[in-house]
Amino acid sequence: MLDLNIGVMLIMAGIFFVTLIFLKMWLFEPLVKFMDEREKKLKEQMEMISKNSEDTKEIEEEIKAVLQEARMESKRIITEARNKALEEANQLKTVKMGEIEEAKEKLRTELAQEKVALLNELLKEENDVKSLIENKIRNVA
Image 1 (tube, rainbow, N blue to C red):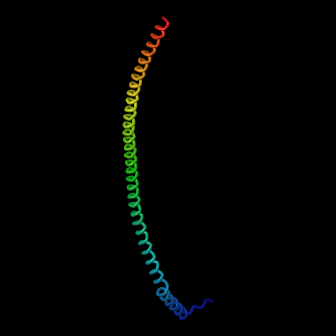
Image 2 (cartoon, one colour):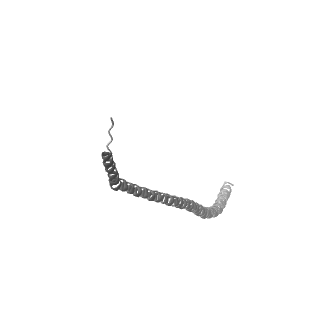
Image 3 (tube, rainbow, N blue to C red):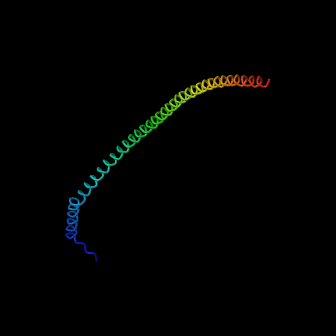
């Protein structure tokens, strides 16, 4: 039935082992070498990504610190500007109030002078009216 031929089996085994040796030299070793290089590159890239991530976190923290400082500085500048504006407004108010007081005093002085002038004029006219009445009374009498 089954006739086994040892010579053919040995030749087949030899061809099989020679084929395995050639496959190892031409296929498996270059493939393993390529996969090792690829794995090494991936590890390097992962390390670089990790380092970049840490650098990015540091930069983000620096940016946050700079922004916080800028916010504080802007608040300080706004407060200073507001205080300076209020101070200038108060100074201007004081100056204008002084000018108003001076104008009031000047007006009071002018009114007092006009009052005196009017009283003098009325007294003069009163004397003229008295003289005129006395003349009329003398003429009638």
